[in-house]
Length: 210
Image (cartoon, rainbow, N blue to C red):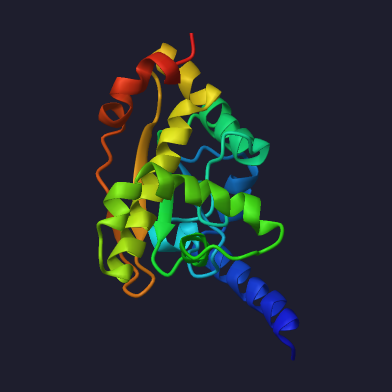
């Protein structure tokens, strides 16, 4: 049996196990979704959103891309944010970076990666914004980890800038935004305890929609 066939076999086993544990499980999912969380994470195969959070299908609305970015010009991620905030009314938006992130490593050592070049420039911009702090870190591994943290935090600011988030702010119903870093080597999540309002406070005049 090949790996493809094995995946289908495992799906059947998973579905049967779910039905044994709760015969109404899939019928309840058919009735719609009302997740509490929007998880914006990396496409890395080692960082499955529901699994690392210990949550079930229906609990987390998920968007993943290389290096968990929230570019202002990316209609894909902006549409996800709009749908999650406006229609699903999620209470928490999480941007989750992770250790051993290939996208962050690639941005730290610029090389020609074809179509990825433009995407990775978003991370390079984060490096530029925090250039003095990052270049002052002599240890490369520590500098790499700090860029992972800063990238997650900057993407949270991009969530703040989204039209959907701004509209919710106008009626004081915006979700909480969190920056996380998942450690691939330990399986643990570190909440960066992001104070988003403090971070954007001095930029309110240019970040808020009117």
